[in-house]
Image (cartoon, rainbow, N blue to C red):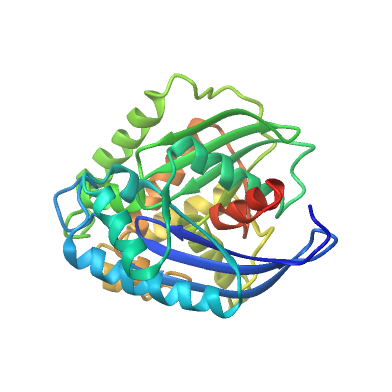
Length: 315
């Protein structure tokens, strides 16, 4: 890397939320966080159970968020890279969205495929935690898809993206966000079928522990921490829970049949209370299929992976 300081703004346009981080890359390669923003905004959720179309209303809201992010990045004089995941890459009108975003915010949106998303997520994880001497399964449960990365000694063995996400499955199995035993069972079986359909995923892989990132796993950590300590810290990087602790949280949340009840659980954000059951179902099934007992949280995910990818490419 050049021996000068660079500022990078990484934008993650997800299915459930938009994220911005702005960092300064110091001469020794370390990062200084300058700013971060998050906006809950769902894309592709207004039409049917798929994520095949971004509505005009969603586009207009997205442009406002991107305009705000652009202003913040320009204030910091940062280089911007914006990546878009499941909802945008699957949308039939993604080109219209990309064009509108660029014309009205100045931000060039880059849709990335699931495998590229998974690689960038794992790059973020590697820079958050010392995992390169272990056999690990990286798990990132998003709104539209779930990324799975199995790595041994820091080298990926398989990198896969599965079309199961918290928003996608909520729309398919819990359209009114109300839980029933039948719906939960059907959703769980669907998740298992979708994961098993990917022949490249090996379930007998040796896994020392799983490393997780993003909303569902963040939420589990916050619930677990509150139950143990009566408070929630903002910084949870490296926080760990085991399968038994997860199962207790799963049972507790899944007994709460509607979002308003779930929103009262310390650790569950109000804007995630409707879709958290689907996220928990995905995580439970992954832990079972891979026989995982320990999960460690990475504060770094896709957006940090974007930063390190830019650094590695010499910006």
